[in-house]
Length: 396
Image (cartoon, rainbow, N blue to C red; front, side):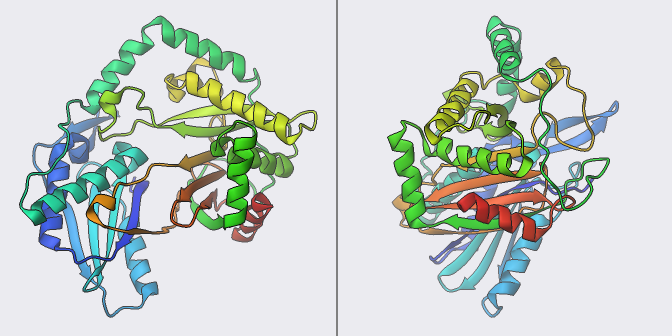
């Protein structure tokens, strides 16, 4: 329906790029990965994926050297946000913005229906490798793509027919309450009868000292920074909603088989992590509860969430997302650019889909040793000022 659900981003790189070679590298990446040539047509009332043999990359170059940064940023966001016709449009696009002789912005956008975050990192690494090979007149040093997304789906179907899937389903039955608690955050506006997906983003940063304390607390309690940051998120939601039982969704990469590590597609599987904050737990107790939930979820991560909702027999409330209404994401993949001498400066682009009531995403920038965070929220529920206050409270 023209809803642009993008994944990707933009980076500034301070080297002289050759657009023709970048276009050729982009074409090669699209040729390597069938998912990037996918379209979706309606047959017998449902969507069916088609893979085109033709390669028609959506590539463009913009000279913005004389424009102020605010206008350039607006152009980048506009190109990133442009909707897709899933039946006819290429579902991935690459844009180059020339800001100066050795100053370029590379923007990549792809519809989430054929991509996830790992795929995006794979794309950037392959693009740079192929580009450098073309520039230096050598063959790209890329591993062959030996599997397809279809192979993953077939492997998943075989798994679901076996005993391991049944055991994982029983784990989730035991972990999720019979009456799944709805997260009752106080909203600024009445909740629409049918869930909307209008969203905005509130960016903030944990300063260097606080980021160091997060790492130290994790080490002290034999936990990960993921567990520490997630525990603080549970505390924030607990304070705002005033309820003890909270389920937060958190995605795993879905690539438990090494064979699919470099395969392009949507592998992500969200885990519904249930934690009780009853009994006023100490910091150590809360970290232990969250760690137990996370480790149990990881041990049973291969059971597809969409089937879990069906098996639990949950009644779908059209006004909110099923099982959990808050999401937590920690990105930790690093693009290997050192071998080319590149330094990528990431540009924050607002995500405008409010898929959940509230989503907290974070990543640690190794250059400044700080956690960079964003609260993505549904604008039909919350005002910008409310979420800015939530961000301040999370830091506190």
